[in-house]
View 1 (cartoon, one colour):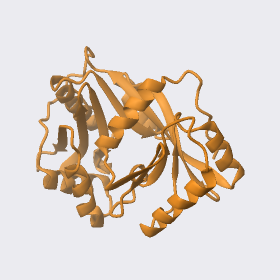
View 2: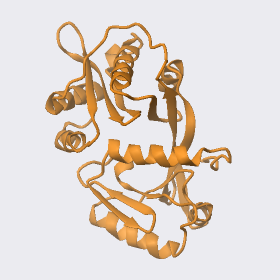
View 3: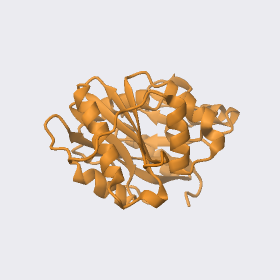
View 4: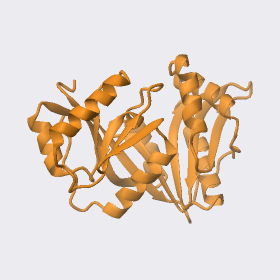
Length: 261
């Protein structure tokens, strides 16, 4: 996979702020620093966002081989493959080093933002957020089809989110979950995470309903800017988010040693 190099017109202060709030919105169970490299590990859940090395200073690229080997051993202890997450904050020298050392980039993700302070949100049925983590996790598992064995790990992650959050569940008339989404309100920013719609409930406008409810709640809670992350090849999700005014702020990708097929 070929991933474009970071664009020169990236808003670096915004990138730093969105990276910081994203760490709080989806917390890893273990976080250590090697210089400005954040090493995020979570033994109970395989999510790449909480199992990767994230370089956060474009000038911090010394002793690369030693630091990567140190990180590899830490990941090995957790039974995880070493992944490096490339954002616009990653040193270009590190990117070049990875490319020349047999690493491959994969899974480009768009980080998108939307001004919700005065946005005209669609008129849909409103859903109030739940604070019942257990109920939300059960609904999420049914809707997403994720491995039920991840139930304790997902509950732990959601329970570890420190900023105020709303857990949104859209159910049918029989009480079966159709869609779920997490909204994390961090001062004036609102993060949209884990938006899932059950396969038999897609293309019915349900994603629009539950996203509208989350954004309205966030705005009432004081948020002015909403953000989210979406894989760049997920065209239906991109179309939905663009309808709400989300535009690309920057992209990131993951690197791993060897073939990225």
